[in-house]
Length: 228
Image (cartoon, rainbow, N blue to C red):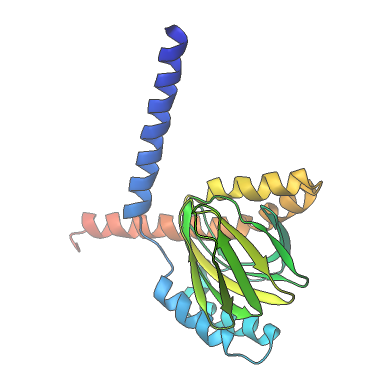
């Protein structure tokens, strides 16, 4: 009986934490506009080459979000579930991200479960996917300029063709998604690539924290001085 009570208590605590995080995600202020990102990504997809697409995506994001972007952005190796990808992290935070993904060779596999809603635009190449959470055996295919959505806790098997580039924006509890990346990298014997990636993101996290702290300070300062 004591063991059952203990398990029930942990389940209730887990449920309460889950609901609290969901509530926070629902009412949190976000820095990036999904509509704006989709417009920038669509423009980047129309560029003639992949390198120009990434350049257009980066410059487009800087025109709106330069204060929260790192000065220098570089590609990193990323193992996401069964997918061997490269990531170009434009903006990374605990509750939202904007990034490009690419693969020089064909790769396929499950992307893993994620506590986030993500919208992606194919910049170059082709992405196919199969929803392994339903009884439907049909697959979807997305080519350059097309967009697709990966919903919270949805499960898909993805296939990226050679030289595919995708731009994605997502909102959610991203530390949960980080476990997929970390476990995948470590299981394949690449813990150092995981460490290198998160060490490189320190500036991103600091920029986002500084912006949030400044916004909160200015809000309460305005209230104190009667401006609100």
